[in-house]
Amino acid sequence: MTIRKALTIAGSDSGGGAGIQADLKTFQELGVFGTSALTAVTAQNTLGVHGVYPLTAEAVEKQIDAVLSDMGVDALKTGMLFSAEIIEAAARKLHEYECQNVIVDPVMIAKGGASLLQEEATEALKKVLLPRALVVTPNIPEAEVIAGMTITSEEDKKEAAKIIASFGPKNVLIKGGHDEGTKTIDLLYDGKIFHTFLGKRIDTKDTHGTGCTFSAAMTAAIAKGASVRVAAQTAKQFIQAAIEDGLYIGEGHGPTNHWA
Ligand code: PLP
Image (cartoon, rainbow, N blue to C red):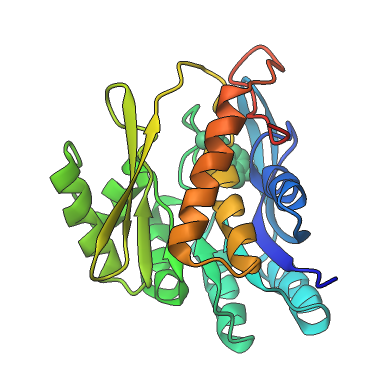
C-alpha cells in the first residue's frame, strides 16, 4: 500500500475544532498520514481565543526540516502563520525542499475577532508565500484584504481572484461561506478559466474551523493525486457534510464533524 503523506504548518487550537487539530483529523479521515509544524499555540474553546503564544521562526524551520528531510510529503498546507518572520521562514523551507503541492490558507482573523496574523505580515504573505502556492484558499474577508478591494457580487469575486492570481499562486479559490442568501458559491480561478462550486447554506452557528478543514481536505486530495479542481470538489463535499452533521460541543461556536 502506498502511504500518502501531508504536512500542515499551522497553529494549535486547544479546543480541537480548528488549526492543526482540524487538519490532522481531516487528513486521517481522508486516508492520508498527517505530520505537523506548529507555528503558535492558542488557548481556545468554542467561546473564543483566550491567548496566542507564537513559536520562534527557528522552531518552525526545525520542525519543517525534521519532517521534510526524513519523511517527505506529497502535499502540504499552511494555516495560521501569525508573523512575517514565520511566513518568511516557511517560504524559505518550501523553496529549499522544492515543495510543489502547496496549499495556502491565508488565515487572518478568527470568527470571534481574534487576530491570527499580524497586520504587517500581509505584505510578506503576498510577496514570499503566494508565489509558492499551487492554490490559495481565502474566504471573502481574506480575499478583500489580499486584493485590496470590497467584494459584494460574483463579478467582484472574479476581479479579486484575478488580482490575487497576479501575486503568483497557480490557482485561487475564493470560498463562498460568507455569501449572502441561501446558496454559497466557491470560485476557482486557474489563471485562465473560472469554475464555480455551488453549495447550500446550512443554518448553524457551529462552523468553527471550517476554513482549516476545507484546505486540509484539499491538501489530502492533492496528496492522493487529485487535480486542484477535483480536490476543490472533494473538499466542498467534506465540509458540507461536516457542517450539516454538527457535534454540539461547547457553549459557543462548536466544531464541525470530521466523522460525517
Ligand atoms: N485558531 C487557529 C489555530 C486557526 O488556525 C484558525 C483557522 O482559521 C482559527 C482559530 C479560526 O477558526 P474560526 O475562524 O473557524 O474560528
